[in-house]
Image 1 (spheres, rainbow, N blue to C red):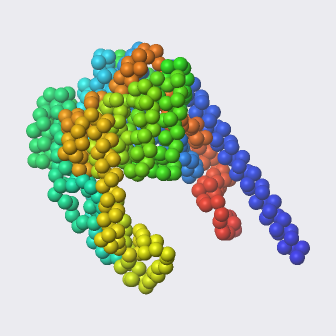
Image 2 (cartoon, rainbow, N blue to C red):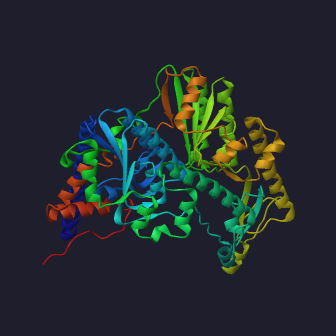
Image 3 (tube, rainbow, N blue to C red):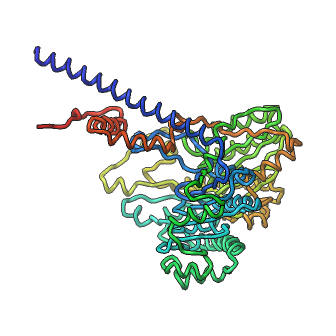
Length: 594
């Protein structure tokens, strides 16, 4: 007993000591990280003369900055990743155009994950930057289509001699899963309005319907036509037909780099190590004295710092993601509606820009947001919509009542339609030997249920409900866009449109970006040149935003991990501990030595 008592006491002591030690290590790392972050921010606040803004087209590009969800294993693996954002890139390019210390722009092409509309917005900002007279160089080891689209604005495009221009046009892949569901015993009951409302097809069909294929062919054809024309505006040796020939005949993705050079896609094949010499010559500096500045370094204000203030405010609300109820991601209408109504009642807010980047979602939620926006307009304040990558279905529902709608030419919008998709697992239950039994006070007490299919009467009831929702959608579009309901029905049917075509048929007013919508709103509210921006939802950075992307912090962590066995053990233990679930049934972590 005494021996067990001593062992338990010692183990408790050691456990407590380890916990305190580990907490201390975390605190030490975080404090150092914050110090490095603040120090680097301070050091970068002044941009050296003859600096070069570097746009790294690599990884994900989000709409705006968001609070980082802590990933402890990422922290202990030498840093925390922070995606680039369109708003920071746009601000940086505008600042660089007027900043006398920025001499040029260097676009580094990689594997970038962003939609055509986001890349087009960046491309437009680069074109505006070029009006300053400053040069733009681009380089890539491998140039994917999206990165190349932006890089095509450059005065000179360089590529690795063993690289490639991976260009193949626009396409999408949808997995049709009816065969899978048939095998496992699940069927789907569909109620919808709209010939082109094809979101249900992957669940209920083996292959794409003709209407679905037709609308995608038209959509992609229009978008690709626009992108080809834009590329050719800057690459004078190219024509739209020649670009298609390079894709279809030459198979440029797999062709030698010499073909990309001779065709005019790029200017010269060089190794990346030579780019510093070229850039040094461009800004008239010695290669060793080159100063590169990232968009984040150049833009002192980030999204978090734009807080409400001032007498004349133009509010910008970001509505990004699916329209949902109670989710931490997407557009939670329960949270967004009070924000809109508060802004309507705030006398300091003179106008509102709704930045929509949403494929839609809940019809009920869309209606609640739409009604709140109507209330805002009832106060006599202007409302503009700026469409991002998508503003379709529910995303268009919340957009259509605005006083003016701006969209990027490559925005996907429309999809005016509604559907319901109800699963039926009766066959699956039979296969696994489950026999549900029902009891209730009324024949329809268990309607709807996942355990048996709806009968004809029940399907008719649900279909009628969907049709009422569709009529409500149609009437809202007709009122907002000042069209007849007959006209709206002609262009609705769940069909998606590119923004250029959407402008032609009246779903969009102007082609332009977020800043265009802000400028219009300020002018309409008679505060042009005398207003402040307030950004919503008001995002607060997480603790981890303070130490994200700390290059010096990453180096420090790497050095600490190489200092010796004790440090290695501590860091590794901490990495595993923080990466686990809170409750564990686990043997003590130790190493056996002889």
